[in-house]
Figure 1 (cartoon, rainbow, N blue to C red):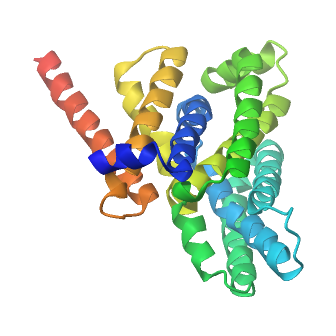
Figure 2: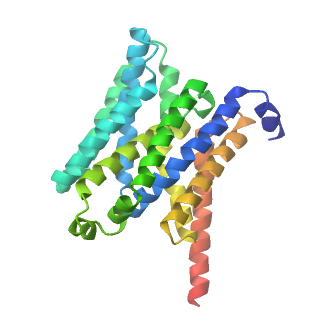
Length: 283
């Protein structure tokens, strides 16, 4: 662990990783709080797995046609927003078929991504980084793009705080009060898509949903107000992500996987404490 802090002063890639952890944690705490409150984590999961299709297509055209400007994250954003629109539109127009559509998008996105990655020269290592994250590989350009997405999510979330709050706790009442529920639902799903893209950079497609929901679940045990839930979730996400980077550095383990293990242990400890404390209180 001491070696990590020594190297942190000398290596830019470690500094980029720490900044990425901080930047991603803020929208993760905000959007994740709404997702857990609304109980729509399955939507985020569907979007997360669809992202592989966009990543695979972008990587294919970047390498085969030498389009150096076509960063894989652009493909991820496109795929995530497309999936968000389809899922959001389905939830509005055909609620009874929402689960089926999410499953279809999930499977098709993964399949497209695998096919394009398989056809891309020298992309075998990319599949692992996409699935399980590669926060230590974030470049300065990546960091700038992450910061831009971060700013968009944060600004939209705070400007539409009251609308999203209403959707989370009493959608029908909000509709009766004249709130354009369907429009704000689509906007929120779009912000969820952008947040998922950021998380794919940190912990990968497979584990993105865990980092989006578990810190919020832990925070929900100790908080009662939405703004408190958001703040504590963002703080915990930052702590778990940076902790994962530090603990994985010495043994040379995947940072994303260590982050999720750390988050999962914290969740079960908090859950156990809550259960034990509740029993004591009842007595």
